[in-house]
Structures are given as C-alpha cells and as structure tokens.
Length: 172
Image 1: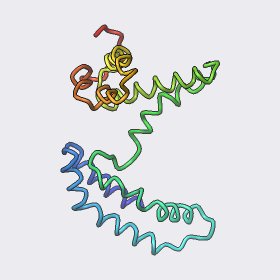
Image 2 (image 1 turned 180 degrees about the vertical axis):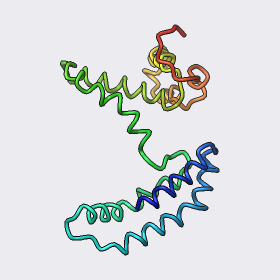
Image 3 (image 1 turned 180 degrees about the horizontal axis):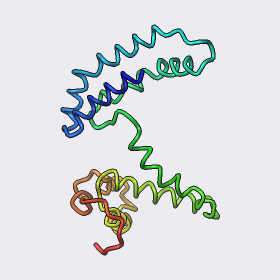
Image 4 (image 1 turned 90 degrees about the horizontal axis):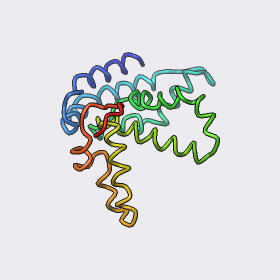
C-alpha cells in the first residue's frame, strides 16, 4: 500500500506549482491508473477477520469515492496534512482553553482562531485581515449579502490584506 501512496505523492510533487486547472488535468491523466492498481491490489488481499488489516481494507473500500475526490478539483490537496497543521495551534492551546470560563468565551475564541487560520491559509496579513473585518463588518449589519466582499478570496480583501502572513502588531 505504501508504494501506491508514494507514487501518488510523487505525482503531486510534480504538479505543486501548476495552476489548479492544469493540476487537475495532470492528475486525471496519470493518477486514476495508480488508483485502479491500488484497488486491484486491495482485492487480492485476504485479511484475517477482525484484524487491523481487514479494518483498513474495509475503510478504503467504504471511502473509495471520498479518497479519490481530490482528483476532481485542482485546488484540493491529496492529503489533509495542511489542515492538520492548521489545527495544531488549537491543539497546542487546548489546556489554556480550560480557562475560558463560559461557553460564549470558548465560541469567541474558536471564531477568532478560525479567522486567523483562514487568513494564513489565504496568505493574508493576519493583523490587517482582522483589522479590516472589524472595520467593515458593521457596514453589513443590515445587508448580510454584501459580506461576500469580506471573504478572504474577494478582490477587496486581497487588495487590502495580501502579503506574507504576519501576526505582528504593526498598524495598517
């Protein structure tokens, strides 16, 4: 199984600098064949009932569509490693979160952490993004549809907040 994963990840490294549409095209040209070989290989296995291998094989077959879903969108990553790294700050702070005192405090903290990680994931200046959100969000109180302008992929936010992710406290 590791051999198949290594081949898929090797292919991904070849495409990492391509635009999403080209990455999707390259994936569809090469990776379905690797997946088919993987599924065929899995079918040849005869794991012992109740073994960890049997559970792994069943998991793979039960999640076949989900495991291959990244092939349909060049923006998607082959693994969730990046997402795991993004939640690491939350995991590291978990003991500190015991002192939130209230459910509302915990919700507020999770919202702020989500905004920070979203800014990082979109290569935005974190301080500038939070500042911009706090500055402009009241304008959309009566017009929630306009909030789209404050999404990290909007031209408005890219113009105001693009750049190397920065968590310093410098003024905008």
